[in-house]
Amino acid sequence: MKDYILGVDQFLIPFGKRYPFAFNKAKGHWIWDINGRKYLDLTSGISVVNFGHANAKINSAVFKQMRKISHISNYYIIPGQVDLAQEIMRKSFPGKAFFCNSGAEANEAAFKISRIYGNLKKPGKNKILALTNSFHGRTIATISMTGQEKYRKGFEPLIPNIEFIEVNNIKDLQDKFDASTCAIFLEAVQGEGGIIMLSAQFVEEVKILAAKYEALIIFDEIQAGMGRTGEYFGYQNFRIQPDIITLAKAIGNGFPMGAVIVRNDVAESMPYGSHNSTFGGNYTACAAALATFNELNEKLLEKIQKLSKYIQEKLEGLKQEFPAIIKENRVYGLMVGIDLTDKADVATVISALMDKKIMTLRAGANVLRLLPPYTIGRHEIDVFCNALRDVLVPLK
Ligand SMILES: *Cc1c(COP(=O)(O)O)cnc(C)c1O
Image (cartoon, rainbow, N blue to C red; front, side, top):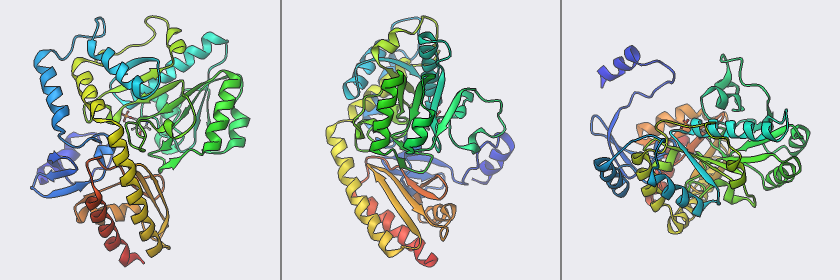
C-alpha cells in the first residue's frame, strides 16, 4: 500500500488529488481494498458501473466477443454497431449513431456536428450556447463549453463563440439565443455542477427558441442517462425531443465507450470524412454496451424509481434532524445531491464516511453526491443514512 502511495507521486502526473485507497476486487455494490477491507460503493466509479461491479452477464458477453474478434477499424462494417444503434434508438428516438470512446469525445463530436450544421445552413451561424455550472469534459472544445472556471483556467485561448446562460434563467436564455446560434448543450440534471435539474419552464423556452432559430438541442446524457434519473435518459423527464444526445460513462458498464445519437436529417447533412475514430465502437465495446442495454429495462427503471422515493423519505428525515447542516436534498432517481451548509465541509464528511467504509462523491460547491449502482436495496440506503447521521451528530 505504502509503495503505491509513493509510486503515485513518483510516476503519475498529479492532475488530480487521490484518496490513499487502492482496490482490487469488486462485486455488485461492494468493493475490497488491497488489504481485504470491504466498502459499500455509492459512486459506481462516477456513474459508470451502474449495473453493478463485475456484472456476470456483461462480463461474459465481453469475454465471448474477445475470443472471436475485438477490433478491425471503421473502414469495415461492424455488425454490433448496427445492433447497438437500434437498441439505443428503441429507448430514445430514431436517428443515426456514431460511436467513440469517452464522454468528452462524444461531446466533441456533437460540437463539430453543431458547427458544421450551422455553417452549412448560413455563414456565421456557429454560436454554441451552454449553461453555467455545466460539465462537458476535459478536451479543449469541451472545457470551452463547460461553464465552470476551474476547468478552463490556464488553457486560454479557448474555442471562440460560445456563450453561457445562467442555469434555469429564462431571461438570460432569451437574451443570448439568436439567429447565429447553431446549438445549445444541456444536462437534464447537472452532475458535476451539484445535482441541479433543469426547470420545466426553462426547457419549454429552449424548445420555443430552438424552433424559432433552427438551432440544435443537445442533451449531454453522459451522467444523467442510462437509467440514472429513473428514465432511460434524462431528457425523458421533460416534454422535449432533442436533436442530439451524447452518451458515455455507464454505456459499457465500465468498458470505455461513448456515443452520439443524431436526428436523421442532421446526420444526413454530415459530409463524408468530416469525423471518425480508430477505436470507436469496436467489437468488444459494442458487445459490452449491447449487454449493458440488455440490463436496462422498464423493470429496472421501476426499481430505481422506488428506491428513489425511499432515499427521499430517509433524507427528508435527516434534513429535519439536522436543519442547520442539510440545506437541501435533491434526488432524481438514483442521482442524489445533499447540499450542505457551511457547518459541514463536504470533504470532511466524505472522509468520515470512508472511515465507516462507505464511498461517496462530492459535486458543486458543498454537495455530497451519491450515484450508487442499481444493485443496491433499502438495506444499503439505511446503512448510508445511519452512517451519515453518525457523522453529522458531532457537527450539530
Ligand atoms: C463525465 C462527464 C463528461 C465527460 O466524460 P469523460 O468520459 O470523462 O470524457 C461529460 N459530460 C458529463 C455530463 C459528464 O458527467
